Image (cartoon, rainbow, N blue to C red; front, side):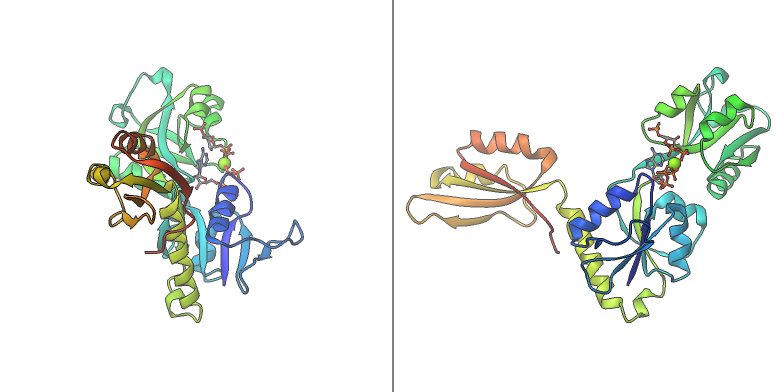
Length: 285
Ligand SMILES: Nc1ncnc2c1ncn2[C@@H]1O[C@H](COP(=O)(O)OP(=O)(O)OP(=O)(O)O)[C@@H](O)[C@H]1O
Ligand SMILES: O=P(O)(O)OC[C@H]1O[C@H](OP(=O)(O)OP(=O)(O)O)[C@H](O)[C@@H]1O
Ligand SMILES: [Mg+2]
């Protein structure tokens, strides 16, 4: 089975870390190798350009691929969107010079030139909004185009907004939101690999679900148990076991990292003791 992943760029490291959390690790091979074996027998990583991954998967050259959702839309391919991931988050925005003094696309006057590498996404967006524009196709460094005079405005990817600001531009509308996604070839389900691909997808969802979640163990005296349970969330319900040598319970539960400080504060106030917090690797549902 082949999984197409970015060979460079900002998605490469998070994708490798994510695969690592699923248990797939590239085996050492020539640094310049574009097809890399992994510790999973028969699973190979195909290292290609992030924007080429949708086409490679659609063509069936790789059963699975991990890329940005923006590139999936832009390439207009017919692939399965299998698992939406929690990294590579960015927005595609319409940005104009701050000096125009406008705050929305409706305020744009006349026909403008817009530089973008998201040609198809931009064309659809402009048609939908009824904005008259000529698209200037570029392949990067969009922010410099207005000051160069190559375009009046841009449709480009933004995360912190620092690059826009640095170039005297301002986002006036969000065209789409993007993050990394696992895509699959439409025919994969019929392939010999279907069973292994399904196992892999289950592990991926498990690793994703387990992120930012902690397993929490605590001891609670019998008379405090109801009060402690009342402040605990759990996937189904907390697990309870009676401690052998005292009139107390061990309570085991899963807590979201974001809410952990608040909940730990509450259980301590309600009488829980000896609290142990551990990372969860995967949750298979
Ligand atoms: N701040 C950001 N800037 C650009 N892309 C981002 C950002 N945050 C997330 N992404 C996502 O990462 C992917 C871009 O990766 P890609 O490898 O094409 O470009 P890169 O990281 O800019 O590398 P390069 O442009 O040098 O090839 C897109 O799917 C995009 O949505
Ligand atoms: O909102 P920000 O946090 O400032 O990030 C957005 C910038 O990052 C990317 O540039 P990159 O360095 O990838 O160069 P590129 O445009 O040549 O791909 C993107 O194209 C923007 O320029
Ligand atoms: Mg880039």
